[in-house]
Image (cartoon, rainbow, N blue to C red; front, side, top):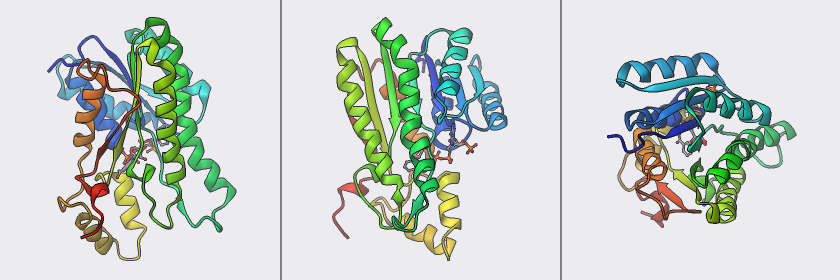
Length: 259
Ligand code: NDP
């Protein structure tokens, strides 16, 4: 407990799923948490739920669209007004855009990059000046195992997620001399609404769900809380020399050549 005491954290897409689990875990470890979420109502509900569950938790819900630099800047300013400068940023907001490259629309391409890559850069750009000035900060970008491996028919999501790793490494190197750490987490399948939506979009959702559970060597998929534990570690002072890195959370799936 209290591994993040005194820190101010901003988590994008924190209304549900992995982002909500990270916000919950950060609050439980003593951070003041800003939930920067597209859906203002979900943000408020999740912030309230955390405050009720966790005595003394400091939470703030801010409607935020990560595709809009001004919206992200405004969320960072609100965080600062409420709790002080942002020490930890988690760029978690993301969407699945899965298409065939040649039949994909221009809008699909732009939507994917606007959220999954521009959104991450917009977050970094909003907090970096303050972190550089204070010579302290931890940025955690939620990538995906799609950042290393390709599943046919999932274009262009993996292209954007490869970009997230590139951005993480580039900014990690640029700002290392200023004591700002930039790292990524690459989850494999994690059970959230995103995963349920994908199963439900398949011709046989139950068969798709069963097939997904068979993929990791541990024969299950991950839980949002399992990603949150790693985010706490990277956000804390327990990881002072981890920078420009990526931690994969997939039960070993990407290390498996084949059964
Ligand atoms: P969810 O869809 O459950 O949650 C994503 C959250 O991000 C939603 O609350 C959504 O809000 C919000 N969001 C979407 N667009 C924006 C935006 N423009 N600005 C602010 N918030 C936005 O997804 P997960 O929790 O599963 O995924 C979180 C991250 O983890 C994503 O980056 C995803 O790519 C990554 N990931 C997930 C995996 C999985 O298996 N679940 C695996 C690998 C990576 P709203 O509901 O209003 O749209």
